[in-house]
Length: 224
Image 1 (cartoon, rainbow, N blue to C red):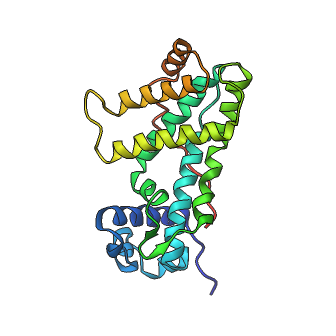
Image 2: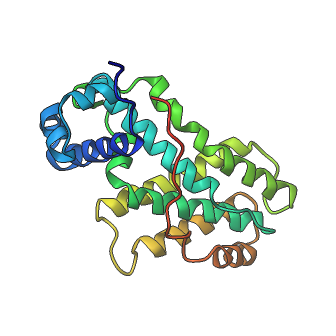
C-alpha cells in the first residue's frame, strides 16, 4: 500500500501547534505525543510530515518566513515609494503580531527544543528583504533617499522595526509611548536619516495608512 499523501492543512496545524507549545511550555513541553494530542492526529503523523523534531523546528522557521513573504508580496506598490517602504514595515509588524509564536521561532535563541538552527537556516529568511530593497531603490531613483547601499538601508529599517515589534510583543511599550507612536516616530527618523524631507516623510507615513489589509494571504507550501 502506498503511503497516504501529505495534507497541507495538517502540516500547517502541526507547525502552528508546535510553535504554540514552545511559546507556552518551553522546549521541554514539545514532544511528538503532546503535539499529536493537540492536533488530533497520531504520533506517526509528525514523522510523516517532518521526519523528526529537528526537521519540525526548521519547518516552523521556514513557514514563518513563507507567511511573512506572502503578506509582503500581497501589498501592491504605489506612486509613492516612501509610503511603500512604510507599508512594508507595517505589514512586517502585523504579521509578527498575528503569528507571534512562529515569530519567536524565526528569531528565537540558538537552540529550540534541543535543536540548533544553523547559519544556513537563519540566512534562509533574508529573501523576505527583497521587496524592501527594491522599494528603497525606488526611493533613491525618485530623489527621496540619497544614493547608497539599498540593501544596507533595508537592513537598518528591518533591525529597527524588529526591535519595536519585539518590545511590543513583550508588552514593554506603554502610553503615551505605545507601539503605534514609537513605530511612526522611529520610521520617520529612519526616512529622514536616509535623505528624505521631514514633511514629505510625514506625508508618506500618513499615506501608508494605519496598517495593511487584515486578511492574511495563503502562503505557498514552503520547502522543508
